[in-house]
Image (cartoon, rainbow, N blue to C red):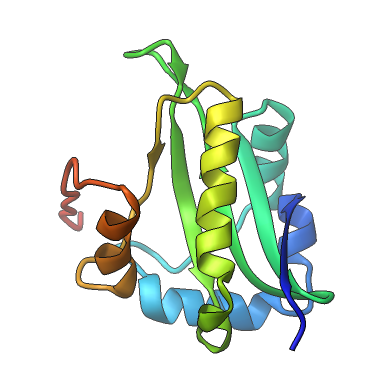
Amino acid sequence: MGSITIRPCTANEVINSPEFPALRAEYAAESAVRGLPDPAEKEAMYQLMEANGAFQLFGAFLGAELVGFVAVLAPVLPHYGIPIAVTESLFVAAAHRKTGAGMALIRQAERHAREIGSPGLLVSAPSGGRLCAILPRIGYHETNRAFLKQL
């Protein structure tokens, strides 16, 4: 097995990759927020956010195969007046989780956040999932809890 490489990608590149349908299905099965609709990526919205510097996607590749991704939203929040980096999605296919791809994606997202002037990186994780257990061990602390009321 080769080594994992992390590189910037466009949303179109990831969404149109041959591996994306399987990654998307696995991601949705494992990380879906109960009460929200199924994901329905809007490529035009991603393109607009990319053009405005408010969105950056990084892919994890094993050779040419996409095995994971992290999507970082970084809008300038009016409350703070600076970009605040937030992971929209962070996922590595289960078959590739012992490759270091997840940690490499997190570290790349952190570098990106630092480069754009964000004071930190907010990472969302499914309650009770593996990521919730990993984040505190790599320097993250719980700041808030999100709740959803289905309307």
